Amino acid sequence: MPTEVYVAGVGMTKFGKSTLSLPQLMVEAASKAIVDARVSTIDYVFIGVMSVEEFTGESNFAALITDRLGLPGIPSSRVETASSTGSAVFESAFYAVASGYHRNVLIIAGEKMTHLPTAQTTRILAEVIDQGERKYGASMPSLAAMITRRYQHDARLSDERLQSILSKVAIKNHYNGSLNPYAQFRKIITAEDYFGSRYVSTPLRTYDCAPITDGAVAIVLTLDKKLIRVSGLGHATDTLAVRHRDSLTSFKSTRLAAWQAYNMAKLSPKDISFAEVHDAFTPFEIIGTEDLGFFPHGEGWMAVEEGATSIKGRLPINPSGGLKARGHPVGASGLAQIAEVAQQLRGEMEASRQIPGARIGLTQNIGGLANNNLVTILERTDRYRPIPVYFKPDYDPGDIRPRPIPEEPSSVDSGILETYTTLYTTPEGMPSPLTLGFLSTPDGRLIMARSRQENLKIGQAVDVEKEGDLYYLQPSPSPEKDAEGVRKWLHRALSPTERKEENP
Image (tube, rainbow, N blue to C red):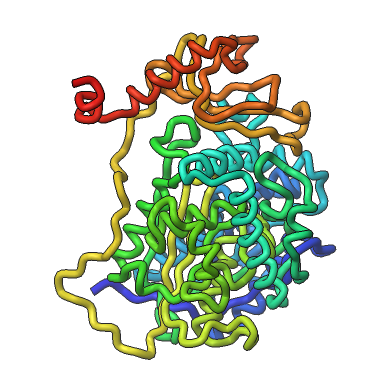
């Protein structure tokens, strides 16, 4: 039998703009967690920060924090996996305890971001993006927006319907955040507020994007039996470049991580009481719930419209307010999700946001643009849960086989537009606004290109020219070429059987 690991203590600072330094925030969270854990010793300290060198100019951070905690001599290590750092550092600490080498391990994750100009912060966050896409001016919001546009197209949602759905996610999470004393935003927003906010990268508005945040979280894991047990962990990666993936509307790294976590926990999606899902962008909450098996692919938006994911719904999603309202200090968000689940399962939340009868909670944390994702499952230990001898989770992750990364094309002169966006909040040094698109080439590859016009349409044929090391696209001026291009594109997408049926 594998060694069981338990959550002994939890500590968190308030999220938002803070006058405290990052070390001060992390010491505050850690001190709370140690007191809550009531352990006599700490055997190891794991530190999670994403870009402390860029954000605060500090390094050797693991030793710095043990020094500030008054724990010199205690081993300390730093973990970093972009915006999933909080979950990844928890995973590392879990294995340290599960190995039996350490009894009590302290995990601290945090980030200090609000003191820098927005353009500079956007540039730092964009450093996790593939260089081949970053050189075009791609940022996290722009890539998220292109994924959203493609999801809208595949789900056949009108602009009005999409905006209504996204507004419901934002309104829900801000309502939940209004109940959370640790949240950055504790103000309820209305549809009028949402639609009055500006576009960051079409079709995403300000209220679709998680804020820049300061904050820290700490958890103590132990071998000593406690009320909350770590049941399942999953961790998977995908290609750094979005253009090299087999889907723009589903994250393989989430599906594989979920499959691992469900198998380890001997659970299925239907067993989950509630979940904290990575909503750095509102559509990512919808895609996340689909990838986790809560709803069929392409139908997560229906659950939002029905109210199924509200705090009083049949499957509450982000009762903390999520990254959207609780805040998103990038290195800490994953650990904040896990802390939220632990406290919900312990029944320690305010009555207004305590989920009654919750026994099993799940977190999904995205690293980078969904290329280093983790799923974590916690459950209460005060009730026996029988596990079938031949357990098989009721979860289909889809095709999770590795896919070879295609070589970059030497030249491109035409293609079919797969998705696009106009980015208004651009990284430092980039022009604004900036229209970007992904297009498929005649040989089936996906490339990124800039456009000098915003009036684009998914599925249209485009002409491509190269200036320097960048591709530029423009709609094909010939309607005949457009129709022919779409016909060929559709033909490539058909299976051999479908092609035979199309051309008997």
